[in-house]
Amino acid sequence: MIRNVAAGVQSFTSNAFLVDGDRTVLVDAGSGFDVVDRIDGVDLDAVVLTHTHADHVGNLDDVTSAFDVQAWGFDADHPGVDEVIPDEGTVVMGDHEYTALHTPGHKDDHLCFYSPTARVLFAGDLVFQNGSFGRTDLEEGDRGALVDSIDRVLDAVDDDLDQMHTGHGPSVTTNPIHDVELASKAARMR
Image (cartoon, rainbow, N blue to C red; front, side, top):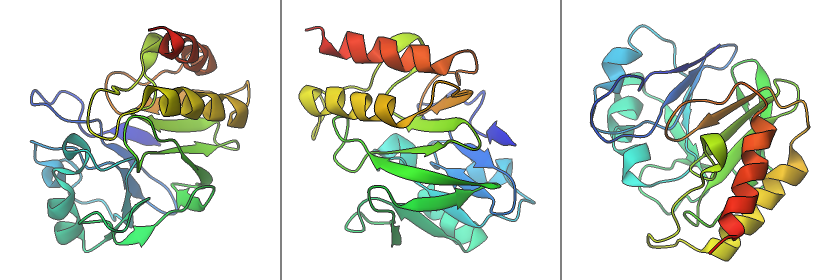
């Protein structure tokens, strides 16, 4: 089961997805709300980060301290990242194995996580509902790299992708591959 524990939060935050199962993982920690209270009673095994923008990691120290868990991400040089997930490395979240895809363009350390068996993509801030895509006007943003990253995700995911969980806004549970295709087209427009 995948649940957005940041749902309904009124401050600026990312989504934070609790993935229950054999290995219970929080995908991104969000910021500006009491995430620890929202997952109290859960036997959390790890935090997995799509990237290290403040809205995704603002609550990270609170979570890792309260649950005595490590944070996994692409760049161990970032404070708070304890374990590295390399490009094409795998991580178990819930009951499924996910492949990490290094997808820079929004931020250099950005990762997407895809499981063909679960038919789930955690897209972070790479793509969103209705073909929206991550900002490239922030430090480390690069439109060309973002386009390449979106295309990489399109090449990696199967047409039967069932769910796409994004860093902001609603998850996409109806034909999410279409939203990724739209983002690929939209990101090419200047």
